[in-house]
Image (cartoon, rainbow, N blue to C red; front, side):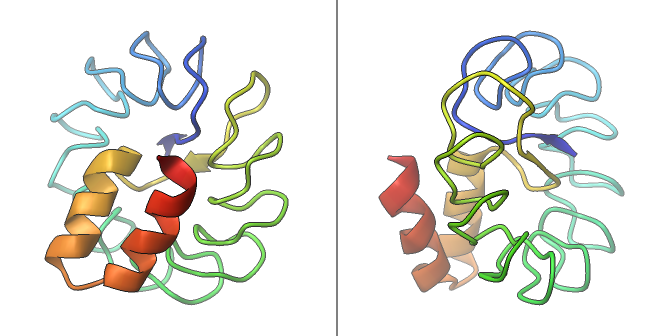
Length: 133
């Protein structure tokens, strides 16, 4: 899990420093190696297996069920209410201020949007784009 909000400061989803969502070092949100947000193997943001950011089953970034990355229900990645991936307030995935960040197993938002489009999830990609850009 990595910070996936719009905060650019320490620990934010758009921070490139250690602990940030766009950190390219070990275990970072934009790291291509093991446990990274851009890793295609187990535990990675681009992994299509269980727990991965592109997994369609429970706990996956492409899961539409409870708690999934594409769920519009409370706690889901496409939920726009408190704690959701599309929420712009504190703790949300689109929040741009400091505080406890929204955490997710998906790759960085811009990469996730491209992967959604490639896989035919056009509606979901548009929902994210409306809030992210």
